[in-house]
Length: 411
Image 1: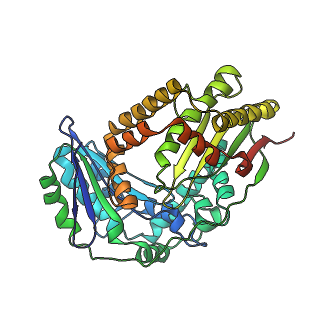
Image 2: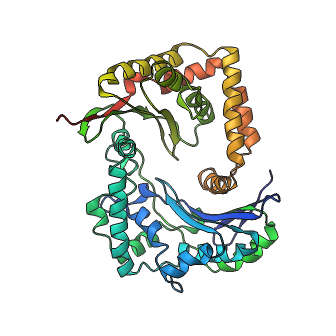
């Protein structure tokens, strides 16, 4: 698949890929700003900004923003991660111009009305309560804090009740003034529309945005020390997390670790952890191994839930699988099957055009280029069993693992 890129004088980049066998266009702004970029006393501000972008601009009230694309059968959405904020839309091709204009409006011209801040504050507090009712979500958020103690990467994206309760209009305006950088913004488009039409619709809006350069620099990650923590919660199972920091986005071994993680506990039912803990032992409904990379660090994490009385046995099985992947090379057939499976999953992901649109924007921001999928496939295909074993010994060193367990409160 071919794509085209245009950089405007103010630094904003437009990336586009035409897909003719669809009626839809997926488009959005990806900004290199996330929750790790908040101040110590402003935890949750980036996520709050994401909410407030829909609550009023210089020329629209909240109702008009929400209704603009919904009334045309389209969708408008946004999300916040540790390093990115995305405002994006899916719309019929004939309405692309309306979607692009609306996205420009909410991204660059939000006014953060004080009355809307008060309303949305309560919505976010309800969102926090919903997450607290989900032990899986709480576990993963708290485990981030163990992996990155005292660092913004370890903070909950939603913030805290205390921090969210303090935000006022000036906080948002100041955050945008200090963090917004037009050289770190991408407008990404994938769908049934030509590049020339995209430029004709979008450039008139984007070229009028003043050039903005931020001097802000992200704080490096601090030294890591393994930690074990047990917490008693209102849960019925033992919820377990274990893992450690791992490879960054720029590490040349990142895709090989993606392959290894897929073998160990990826999304497929035939992963080693799923086969051992669920299919053979019957001790868990779900277990997953996650590899997440950031611009300067990353982590691997294993998450599962089991009955409290089976927690020790489940941990033993997990550690046995980690030992096996560290000490025994994949056989030639195992390696071949692992590569085919991983490549197939990546190829399927490319069929999700909304996801592809977002990936293009993130790749441009993080690496300054879009790495062709064929190159990634070649990296995976070239991985040897010896290379993967060496990588496993480095990454899955259990002496460096941290552990977090939620246990049911004693009655």
